[in-house]
Length: 143
Image (cartoon, rainbow, N blue to C red; front, side):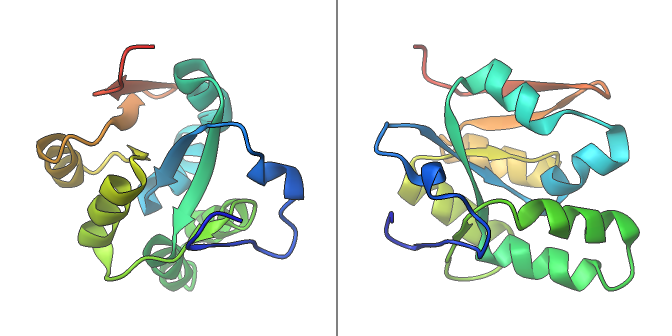
């Protein structure tokens, strides 16, 4: 298993193949996109990136757990997050996401404008929502 990842109970072992895949980190609002806008998150990421591994930073999982206490969409997002491996990260919030993305050379999915700006400045590729049903990417290397 890649360093720093822990597998959640029902993650299939095939999720950790030896094929080089793009690592994609989801922030909290990305996890809630399918429930706010009925977007096909996985389908859109496949369209943009091809083969990828979705990973949830531990700081994002903790944030979603807190929100799930009072928000039904966050509860659904928590169920969605349970399908993916968790990346243990240091720190909290945007700082943890930026650091993890740089360390892992990952793409980050977020609609948070402030975080998108920080990621752009750090040279991290970003995927964000365009309209209400499509994702758009910026900063991806040309294949």
